[in-house]
Image (cartoon, rainbow, N blue to C red):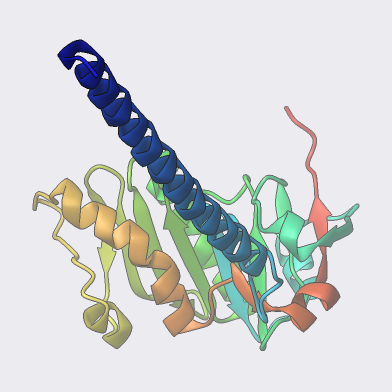
Length: 240
């Protein structure tokens, strides 16, 4: 066998070895991909299982929590009529004019676009809460935006504000001493003339639901039995 033929055979052997190595590598990679895909599918199937605690995908921007009242008394205090049945999950979107929940753990939750917020008019919000508290007793208010991080919370008893704080780009309401849950959650509250860093505002807005859970409960998290039985009422006021 000549030198040319020997070199040709060597090249063929090298190519064959290279192709064999590539084939083995592809088979190995396909095996890894298949195992990862099966693992991902298993995790997806597990995540699709209904948990014992149902967490709603969204929480209303603002809501009221009223202690010890009946849904009927809340509706009367708000001067509302012509209500229609509404599920808890639909009411928690906050898209109705008003949604009044059934009593849950001794509380009635109210959501809706007609609830005045400090961002729109802090004086209107203040007088609205005062009036409602005079009629119904203990009233709590929560407000948290996800984009601009505007936030507020308030507690009232028999028409008297015991604690309130609102930031809408500046502090527009700060009344009463901080409560223990606010302190334990590390919520930063500033004076009327103090500058609030946007980072602090974002953290406060994020913790509003945690504060609600400490003061009463987080309306975006209820157990499955409550969810199935929680039928409230929605009220739509005519648009002017």
